[in-house]
Image (cartoon, rainbow, N blue to C red; front, side, top):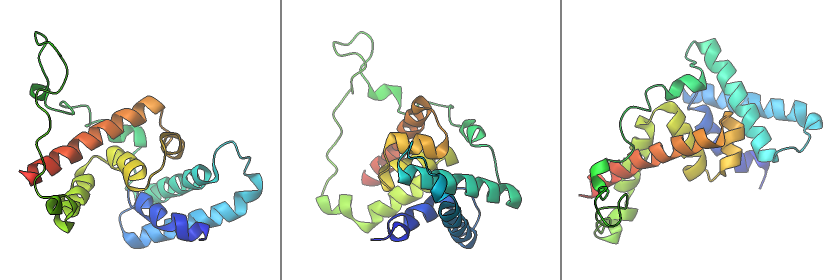
Length: 184
């Protein structure tokens, strides 16, 4: 498989987090590949090739988004994310309990296996990711949908390890909640 075949679809999904249309995202991906070709001689190997490519992609997408007037600094995307708890505190055992801080009850069974793997459940999952704040959507997409490791995501999005973990936890909690509501 070629690099474009392996990374192209993933790059398109990441680019869509920064620009307004699929057509513009496709242009961003093409510009990123041109940047990769022009800069491959300067690749020093301090990170993986994949991380380096995605760093070029995110920089290209941010530049393009600024030109479109749609850009917000990545650090500003988290401004509304700190509101509220990631998981309702009532779901955990209280301070006076023997196992304080542990789940109050084990998760309920999801029901028929078919519901879990159904196309409808996948649509709920996808829609819940689309509703996430942009920083959370970027992190969960890169980690859980595309399978990048934490270091690759941190490098590609210029995040600290701690910030990446917090964004991923909040995103997973919101997606889990949406799936739980669907399954009930």
